[in-house]
Amino acid sequence: MLGAQATVTNLEAQNAVAAATAIKADINTLRHFVANNYQRPTLLLEEQILRAKARRFMAAMPRVQPHFAVKCNPIPEILSIFNDEGVRFEIASKKELEQLIEIGVNPKEAFYSNPIKSPEHLKFAVDNGVEWYVVDCIDELNKVYQAKPDAKFYLRLHTSNEGSTFELSSKFGATGSDVKDIINAAVALKADLAGVTFHAGSQCLNVQNWVIGIRAARSAFDEMLAVGLKPRLLNLGGGYPVELGRPVPSIEEIGAAVSAELAAFPDEVQVIAEPGRFLVADSGHFVCRVAGTATRGGQRWLYLDTGFYGGLMEFDDMPYRLQTDRQGSLINWRLAGPTCDSIDTFKLSYNLPEDLQADDFIYIEAGGAYTNSTASNFNGFDIPDVKII
Ligand SMILES: *Cc1c(COP(=O)(O)O)cnc(C)c1O
Image (cartoon, rainbow, N blue to C red):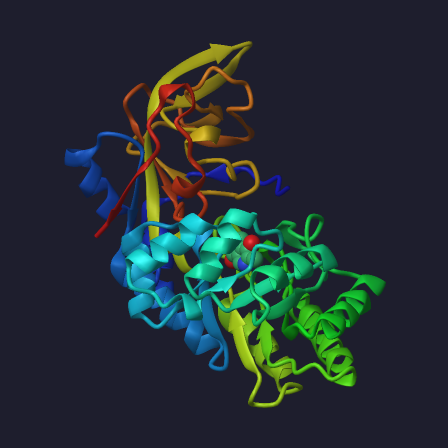
């Protein structure tokens, strides 16, 4: 939980930062777009920036083939743009695989990285030619092996998620003696346990997590080799952060640390990663509107036309920057979504112009990841529209 207060920053300063990094979406494009077209909360993504992010990732880690985590933003145009850039894909469900097949992706190149695969989804993947399946426990190894005896398996290790904004290691990942037990079970089954993966945690600010993960993978490779398995895949997972209100390690910094550690793996080892957030978050901005304002016990409240259920589920943990078209002096506002549920209230408060009122636009910078993909129609409110320009 990051406790920072987000503030509206001066537009010129924002633009200077955008120009310096040359890879951030321009909020004025969004202003211009919504002035005439707004119908419901909208994520506006810029194709050129999606492409630039994919290229930047690949340049930062030349040995690593990125596989976009589809759950992060499964809009077909986004998947096609990445596919065109040479990015491949990581899936967790039947629907995600269907979406890839629709845009012409070969399932052989997709990685099924959900540690627990629902049987019906698993069958669909097997029937459509997916070859690579993650496992992190013996039950799943047996289940996938029965469905596909010639599957190529990769073992998900439990490694450090310290310093990541969203930890992903409490639910999944093999640890301690379980690792050896899974390796031995694969040998007994004659299953092709062919690789190792880990996840550093999402929006991970700690470069060491990749170093620790790769070293743990090296040890697991050695254990596999010792019992006659043929490990040949190293999957570095996701977690690569985007810069919002505070500094984060750059992809180049992470790439340098990763590349140094990869020297411990022979060239024949295939190395992939599963970036989600990094590839889409700051390729665009999310715009919504003020539904109404209120004063409660002296505190000003700003109710938006979208909220926790409408795509802003991560709002409390990500220090998003908000902008408006108002010039009034900044005061403290509490923010909430439009539904009648009190979960739909944000913990962080924001300094925003005092003269905000119903129908004003609120521009949320870098809202491209886990927004539209997590939205529901709860209480009859629209899920966000997504436009690629
Ligand atoms: C969600 C997820 C990712 C993507 O994580 P980001 O933090 O968006 O990069 C990658 N791999 C797996 C297995 C995931 O569950």
